[in-house]
Structure formats: structure tokens, C-alpha cells
Length: 95
Image (tube, rainbow, N blue to C red; front, side, top):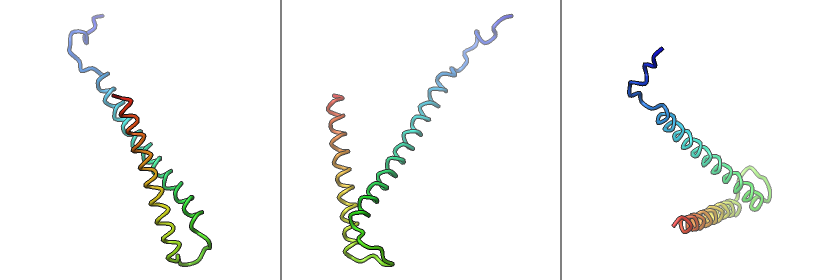
């Protein structure tokens, strides 16, 4: 029997598959970033809670609120500094 598809220019399934694979990789990367962000939030929540919460009460006093805000801001600043430094190191290594 003759192979009828050999004479036709069929769109390559591999280009469609590679586009789907690239999209899947992008979606996986987005989900990994979300998971990392959630882990960071959980981490600084634990750290700052342990550092700032002396006693549980029905209302948060201003000292505790100030401590929590400062703690989270320091945590975010430190994370951004480390991330930026790492990015710089990667960019220097790529050039």
C-alpha cells in the first residue's frame, strides 16, 4: 500500500508539541514562583510572630503591631537584597 501522507506538506506535530511543552514549562515556572512566594510569607509570618507576640489578647497593641510591621519590612528588604545580589552574580557569570 502506498503512503499517502509522504507527498503532502503536513504541519509538523513536533512544532505544536514543542509550543505546548514551552507553555507547560512556563505554567510550571509560574506555579513554582507562587509556591516560593507562599513559602516566604509563611516563613516570615512564623519568624515575626515568634519575635513580636508576647501574649495573646483580643486586640493587638501598638508595640506589637510596630514590631510585626518592622519585622516583615526587614525580612522583605533582606530577601530583595539577596535576590538582587544573586541576579547580579548570575548576569556577570552569563557575560
